[in-house]
Image (cartoon, rainbow, N blue to C red):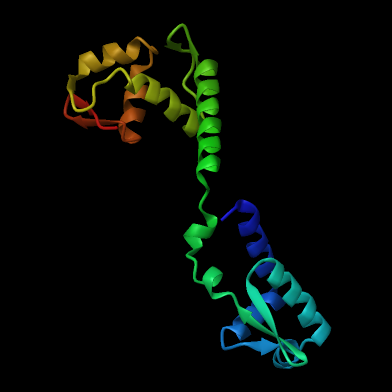
Length: 183
């Protein structure tokens, strides 16, 4: 489902009268006059809302003699909410590209000649910088404290803060004076 269709559905359902109409239609097919009577609305108001619900694909109509009978579009209603709000592959690729652009911007802003100029205050930026530093550690390899400090010092002199933050963020795991990169 496209984002435009999902947006149309959620906009349509954000109106209380349309939501009440949908609730009534779950009990069976009905015509506008019956819905108006049940919900205490005028037939013209119900017809207006039915047009919006039809445009969103939430209801379907059929003619029976002089009446237009409305029913819920079961295929759409039975579709899991997760499928409706999920992004398509092109949207996911676009999001990843934006994330990568942001990541590069942060790295360019905080690293100069391979050294961390300053420890970022914002957590998201800090994590990006710590991921760059963590790239120097082999996952699963056990590092002695001095060896770990030497690697971190190549990036920034405040190895204590960086080491402590990397442990608290789950990038490193500590066991006494031994450290392991876990993610």
